[in-house]
Image (tube, rainbow, N blue to C red; front, side):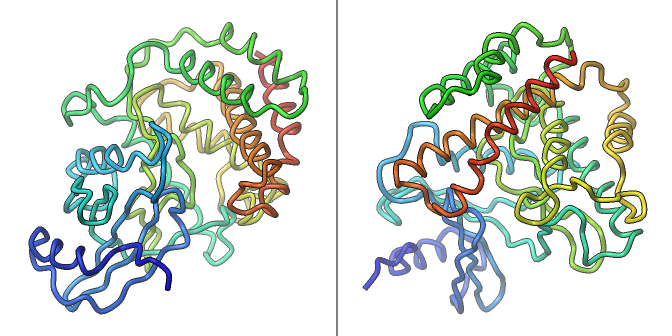
Amino acid sequence: MSKDPLNKENLLPYLANNIDGFSHLKNVKKFSIGQSNPTFLLETDTASYVIRRKPDGPLLKSAHAIDREYRVQKALYDTPVPVAKMLHYCDDKSILGVDFYIMEFVDGVVYEDPALPSLANDDRAKVFSEINRGLSSLHEVNIDAVGLTDFGADGNYYERQISRWAKQYLSSETEKIGEMNEMMDELPKRIPMDNSPRSLVHGDFRLDNMIFDKNEPKLLAIIDWEICTTGHPIADLASLIMQWEQTAGKISRGLQGVEREPLGIPSDENFIKEYCELRNIDYIKDFNFYLAFCFFRMACVIQGVKKRALSGIAANPERSNRETLSVPKLAERAYELMKAL
């Protein structure tokens, strides 16, 4: 018999004592998303909850940071940023053996394909405006006012990020890719002079990390805050644009080759323009740098996936092998953008 990942014999009395109104548990369902930190739906007689826990076993020091997830979402709940309501954090290892937290269940829909084939044109346009609303509201949050002054390191965000990902890349390098080696040297030299104040940066801001209302194109909650930190806001915006450059469909979650205007989907330029208007900032100079950085970072991430696949420790070897074919293409695109600066 497999081990109960929620150890309900311990968990249910604990929740009854720590969550107001928690009643008889009727059903438990494991979500297919949130594999990094196992995530479950708890349905009771009166309400539904989500529990997110660390995985079992030895963990990397900075990985599976559910304490940070809980803290940032709790801090953002009374701001315009749409997030789920946090209910309780538990660091008592006697309950599940690992830390976990409970939040309210947001009953909505998660879209995977940015072409939004199930929606009408007007609703597609509204979904993209809602994405922009969520992103711009996050970047407008006063981190001092919400108690997140110490949530990230000081210093230049891009210098830290490029250095970190370059080290990760080199540790998982399997063959020489000339563009990657040159970017590790050149990209730090091309960081724009920008006096924008530090903001919260989600770090993985994409369509399938958002929950929308089932009945109208309204963003209800942004999820998966594991790598959120403080830094430079345009990294999140460029990450979205980078995602849309990928192959169309819900696997790569891109819009490559899609005729956007007939579908009501904004062009990259119009999406960026709306973002700037929402934040009351000038159109972004040197956007190619931010886009190059995101392609470089993604190449580093996928290279790590490739190394794990070759080592036989990938969670999904078939998908990992398919994704790693894109490393040279990502590197080439990042290099192209960098050279255009």
